[in-house]
Image (tube, rainbow, N blue to C red; front, top):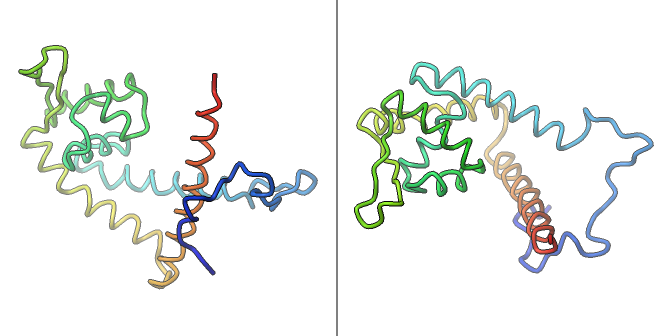
Length: 176
């Protein structure tokens, strides 16, 4: 079974691209891929929340902190885009992280309209602990999988994600 990313020429919006795996006449939410993925994400998020508590972080707060640590953004807009959040939500998250003295806002010397977000030493120390927590939680949820099964699962999920992103992009291109 091919579990790699579909070819770049794959068009999920093309006629015949979708297969009718589900039928309205016998649809059961508990058997829905989306329902199962949502439940898995909820379980993992709750466990990440529990494991991040000693660091003083919530499941939502670790994301921008870790993105800053990885250099994936330095402004509210960049971090919001990288975290799939709107700017208002990101601002509120950063307010909480700043109140915990894990990050700070620094006005750009080149352009006073730009405000950069920087980790404090405490923020850097907390961010360095995040990969261990995430690895531990995810490994626990994958208990019983072989390495090959894990790789297959990754490939299958990557395919679902690629299709979802292609559908989103196609809709965005046709939006008024």
